[in-house]
Length: 269
Image (cartoon, rainbow, N blue to C red; front, side, top):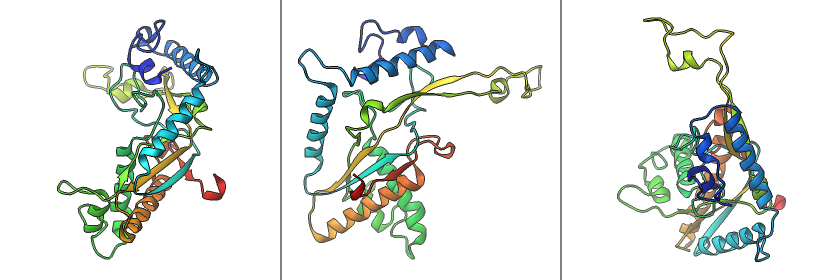
């Protein structure tokens, strides 16, 4: 089952796809679609293929292969534990009202390297940059360029896509709902010629169902150079990323409690 195809291509993952029927629909139809999707997703991870290879065995092989390709030179790893569901990529274009960041080939939720690098770079500029006596850690500062690069030079540190851990992948997807109560008022729909309809107690709520991700992730940052200086910068980058994730969160709606993570220490793995 490729969850990306299930949500973006009619009959892209299975011939009995009902994606076409829920495009543009509201309420119960979309809820039923998402509920069935989550159920099939969980069932797939507990099912053996005709070749006798389970989805988990395939995924374990994928993780092992990914780890081999991300650990050339020096590298640092972070293990983060989900304290709340995450919604990443929700504002991107979609045939449905909401989107979810999923790997196009593997059909599983993941953390794109660009998102991880962006979180770390923003945290470096906004927090570490303010504490620095100079401007080295601010955007376009000397240290910031070393870590993350600029338009004119490549950064020393490489950030890699991160996938859910083997233990958390099967229960990573669940359904959630957002219920705007005053849609006409929020959209600025007029009740008369010039008056915007004011919010009222008898407004009809409009539930919007969407998918979220709650999983643990193993994150790798690496550096091709193995000098003592390069390794020190690598450790700084890993610490920056870890602090950024714990303090800022990942994905959207972090102010509402989504995308909150804590780091798992070596003794907790």
